[in-house]
Amino acid sequence: MEKIIIEGKSRLKGEVTISGAKNAAVAILPATILINGVCTIENIPDISDIKAYCKILETIGVKINKISKNTLEIDTTKINSIEAPLDLTSKFRASYYLAGALLGRCHHAIIGMPGGCKLGARPMDQHIKAFEALGADVEIEKGKIEVEARKLKGTSIYLDIVSVGATINAMLASVLAEGTTTIENAAKEPHIVDLANFLNKMGANIMGAGTDRIRIQGVKALKKEGTYSVVPDQIEAGTFMLAAVATRGDITIKNCITKHLESITAKIIEMGANVEDIGGDTIRVTANSRPTKVNIKTLPYPGFPTDLQPQMGVVMSIAKGTSVINESIWDSRFQYTEELNRMGAKIMAQGKVAIFEGVDKLVGAPVSATDLRAGAALIIAGIVAEGKTEVLNVEHIDRGYENIEEKFKKLGAKITRVKE
Ligand code: EPZ
Image 1 (cartoon, rainbow, N blue to C red):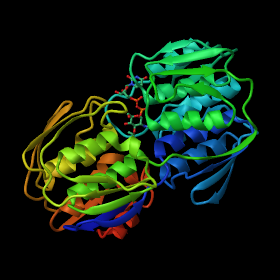
Image 2 (image 1 turned 180 degrees about the horizontal axis):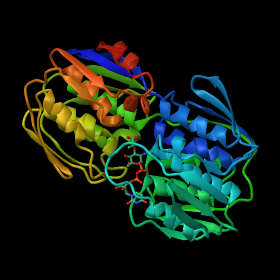
Image 3 (image 1 turned 90 degrees about the horizontal axis):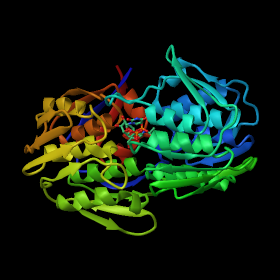
């Protein structure tokens, strides 16, 4: 077990380069199953969810050659099993994309139920609805989900809820289906667009990704080889933007797509800090004074992302005035507020609403990363706070942030990782 130790009260200054997007990479890796050939994926973040994904892919026969830290050559010519075991799938959420990808390629998949951050109920009814609409039978038994279809036939799928995962699984299952599939009320997140760009580059025919209506004209096969580079991580970029505001710092963030950061930028400006687009996929966030209160409601893209809610919570906890967060995506994403309260924050969370009465300062304490984004938020809190903060359960953070303490250290944080 490892923990992160932070000596606080640093103002972060300097440059940081954003890695490839976790939530795009974890969709593109299983999508390579549909290629039935060899492709090279660049700008893959070096994080534990990707390592876990590679392990699962290898157990079903995929050959993975690590060309460099962030580039993988993936050979999906041979798939010798359609079954992914529970001990591997339960480690993270995106393992359920194997269901869509294997169904698309082999018409059959048996997947152990997925794990991932504990954010409240995470049902799969919309995934199942999409698979069934395409002609598959779905059974859930003994912790496994089995999907099987004699033939996959294009259809119209209306998602009752805007779901990233169900949109991706529906896309994966329909790329090689016969005829045209439309996904209505689809999610519009940057990772959906990135997956569509990858599949289209490999010969798929997907239109409308990034809108709420995605149309997929099934093709017989994809190209047998190709190279693709994963989009930069919107959430990692937002994490450093909010770290600049929280620490009254000056951070230049390279390799980010400013369009993906509009909702965050708007809130940061509302809090009195500056966001400057300096061109070349680079922005600079500067903050010279205590942030002012702001209210947010998390929403599917292009709304304010739930995956930046805890990091924003840190800024609100030290802002002038009282701020409110309305979490509309997850039932249980305020566990981190108890940890912040241990550091002197004044937060009252109930159900899907939290009220942040801004305090002058936070004080370091031992805290626990309750999930991935909560962990990133607690690191920011530790950098802001007076004294020493110890962040436990850092394995959650390693699931989604590449080299996080090195990146913060380069910006001036006094942060180290030690074995417990
Ligand atoms: C993705 O999760 C992300 N994970 C999450 O990021 C992110 O918080 C979430 O989208 C929302 O943006 C990955 O991309 C791997 P959803 P996902 O299906 O796909 C309900 C992070 O920190 N729902 O869009 O699981 C669900 O309960 C992680 O990187 C159903 O009711 O989210 C939730 O309330 C955490 N039935 C809402 O929809 C379904 O069949 C949105 O969930 C599916 C979802």
